[in-house]
Amino acid sequence: MIYATLKLLHILAIVVWIGGMVFTHFFLRPATLTLEPPQRIRLMHGVLQRFFAAVLASIAIVLVTGLWMIARLAKESVQAGLGFNMPLDWTIMATLGIVMMGIFGHIRFALFKRLSKAVAAGDWPAGGTALASIRTWVGVNLALGVVIIVLTLLMV
Image 1 (spheres, rainbow, N blue to C red):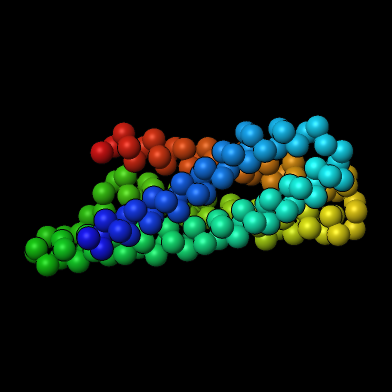
Image 2: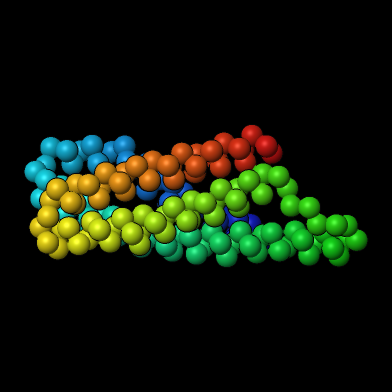
């Protein structure tokens, strides 16, 4: 029961992260293009601030639950007298997930910081540049997230 609960939390955290990127990238951002730059940049800043807080929580949940599931499999393998070999799909998922977390760190702690400074200064061209960089890296992370989902589902 605890395994199923942790796996559910793991998947729900991923849904928040990937789903949030899909919503923002394909629906929210295009809809804001009708707004003037100051309004658009302020809106996107507010949305991203909230979303990035949710992603930080999601990352913590994904890490804790993922590590617990790996540790459980390793413990059961050792107790059964077998060597531990992490499944290939888990290895791919963990590796690409860590890459995604690194990219998110860059987005949140470098690019979003630039956006925040631009919004505070009312520097809309700099804000637009920061948003464009964020959009590019979110696109990369979204692609990696989709690759992880596809590979792990196809390798089952």
